[in-house]
Length: 194
Image (cartoon, rainbow, N blue to C red; front, side, top):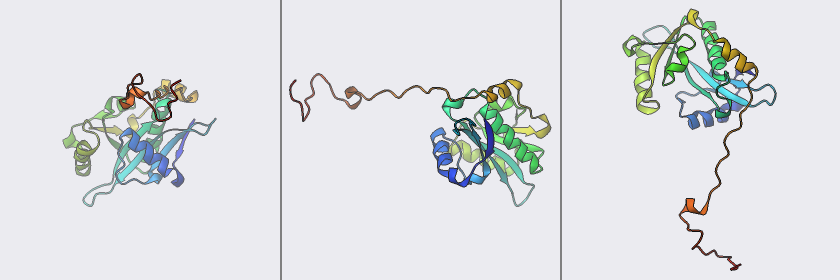
């Protein structure tokens, strides 16, 4: 398992999963994403985005957003390594602080993120928080990470080394009752009476 930059050809895959998970696709650019890949089968397991805001009246701001892990890969450290790669990129861009506006605040606290008051957000992120709460994630809360406080708990590293897709529960088969048909009383066009 490893995490790499997304490729342009993965744009449709990303958009499909972002929509499926109800994540933020505002100002989507595939080059802002990283993707976790299973080395053995080449299967995509998770993704996340670094978004840099450049307000006219202030310093640039770094936000981590649209972090998702496919259901069959959850609980195996995939999300932790996606977050780690995004924080590395933020560091490479010279950011000492990283923000996230998310409903998964308990998850991010494991890595050193702290919940902050909305008033302590830079003005551009205060606007983003309002937009996100209105349109995508009503329970979004502001989180902040000082880069020096970031760490990945060892249990996530171990899980990630041995990650593999878990069996998803099979989709239940459609029955006549699902469509409002009483199978004991219904007749069919090609019913031979046998």
